[in-house]
Length: 137
Image (tube, rainbow, N blue to C red; front, top):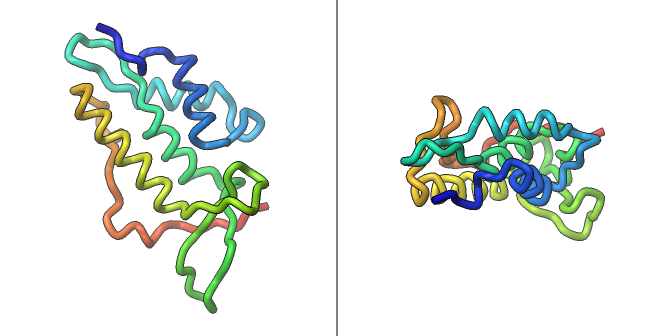
């Protein structure tokens, strides 16, 4: 029986919804490639896309959506990003958002019994307070 995560078009849309990163910033081709490369297989061998893993990876690596909001001297206590892009009133803690998507992907991987390719495990980041910080444009 197929699950909802086997539809590549729907998973591309879900990644866009999760990240609010538009196709002008990261192309559909690149997102689809990430979805395909990181896809797992279930017990029947069906390719199952992993949108929370891809969304988490895109958020972590997309420099144009990351900006320093505040600093305490030279020590950064946390990093927040506007969500949706350009809406300064709604701020999320980037490490917590990434961690949440990784946790969701881990639960989904387990519930669907997925085997994932080496290097694409939804690994949690214990003590996730330390992350790379990039200044936005």
